[in-house]
Image (tube, rainbow, N blue to C red; front, top):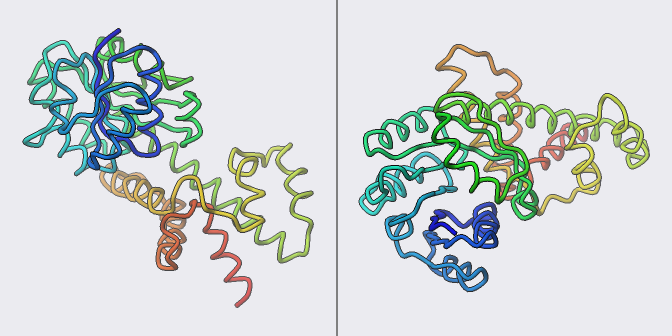
Length: 292
């Protein structure tokens, strides 16, 4: 048993922290809404901490899974942040999908404090978090990764050390570009097939078994056909992630035209008030275009 901290108990963080508790670790959990932390503690037998620093005090492993760069800075580097109380030899792992610039900033701050750091964004969605089957993309040193891995193992099925600090976030950007392309392709194909009057369930049965198959077609194709989106990875979240991709692309001189196109559809979905619907709701924009 180790004392660990988990900061951020949203749709992903809540079950991830739960897996750490199930592995018999002493988990201290912080959430900006204290009631969520208290409910998590009641459900899993851990401790609800009123501040990030209270969660991180004495912890060997501190995991962060919050909204974005500014949120991470607040809970790690702020006045009540975790890093100020972490002991040398402990490790901070950031599971937030954030910028590579932030990862390097945190890496430097942790090194100055004698604390290890791994940027470790995740893929697999809420279902993956609940099942303990997340894919984790890591950036950091071999030594820091070795300290963090036994804890990350509690809620993941695939963990890859890509390279130095920042590599995890850059890999997640590659992941989101691929997801964006899959969503866009599925949306265009489904709207096209519906306009053509095809039986789309039969179409999906045919194409998912061939070269055109993808996770999104297999897991979201039927719900896109049925116009059901009240679940999954929200439009706002995908738009945030693709914004990170475009800013990084500009910084390193990488062209991201597909990302920009999908981001345009996501912005149209946001304008339609669909912010919290699954990102596959962009299929509605294609249907609207077909009707015009």
